[in-house]
Length: 465
View 1 (cartoon, helix red, strand yellow):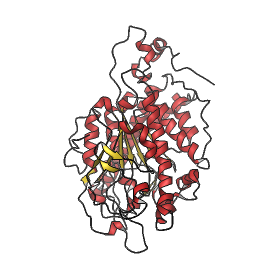
View 2 (view 1 turned 30 degrees about the vertical axis):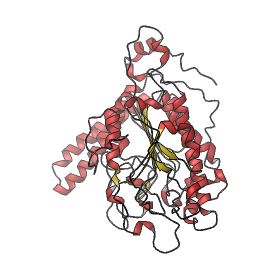
View 3 (view 1 turned 90 degrees about the vertical axis):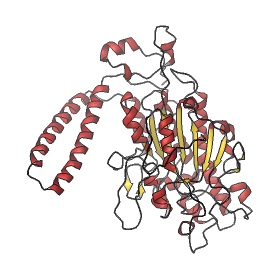
View 4 (view 1 turned 135 degrees about the vertical axis):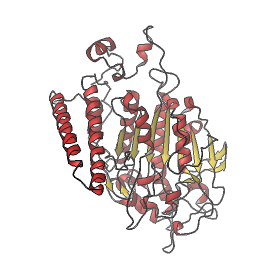
């Protein structure tokens, strides 16, 4: 079924609902000659991969070919075999080293997916778990009302996972995990398939139920202790968030959905077809951005510690379990095998970036990539090491970003090497003081147009991007 995006009657839509924002911004409208000039949308995409990256030391024969970080610095750098699939988009990205979150540098790397976008001190062991709002949701609070979906939250494993074993990298204002969707068909149907005729009735009943809940809760509040009032307030905040979602759903209920071609999509894919699955998940984000269904997306490609369906993704390149590769780097060809898997992830990320670059902005200037800020990385580098995160920042040229370089704040003092069964790199004293990753987050939010000068534990901005 081929359905054209450019055959949507915007005037009929406006008469039917009165919401100009409900329709995606299509370049065909500009060609009519009577449309006002539109500013470029500003999008944010954040992608997380687990288990760190190959970090052979400089005296290891594998260092030249299979280290994740490039060799060189500034604009004079060389990708290794692990990274060379990104060469075609070299001018569209910046590789960063020497960044990490202050609160997590001395904890086991498998605890850190939870705080990748939050910088919270989520800790490890038996300490109390408390998270905070994630970068994507900060931006969603600023721009989310302009699109049908405030944000798109995805992961290969789906749901929320557990504390320090998250299946999502998105957390709300109260630090609660936002469930991630992992089924391509459900994501596609949510974005592009009309809801049934009962949706309006259900929304009406839901709103009525929420009103009753709030009224009852306010009455109950007068009879509670201070501690119970605090717990009730947390509950009421959840109800208020639900109320906001209901109101937004009502607003968009009658707005026509964007139509997209779906012949090329296999929406029944699972991780049993790992390469095609990852490609389809990236395609869902591309389509959501292309139709302006949302301007914010997160995708946790895999969960930490090798538990769950995402551990099967390494079968795309002939290995059994992805997490196991990070433990076997001391074996013959260990670094190469781990590097081949990371190369696969880099290749699929690069494919997504190239497609964004090749697509003109539907109702603006430049490419979609020029108007999209993309963060790709992990919260550990060497074996379980919560420092020197491997990071790539791509896109955003219309926001003032200048790419084609390797910003190396770690210098040549990388910690790494294979795990030999004794102390792990994260247990050793740091050899360099990393820059707070929150500084990069503040910089990104400013590039996205937010008047923001602080995020979590930030100490400034990153001036050279």
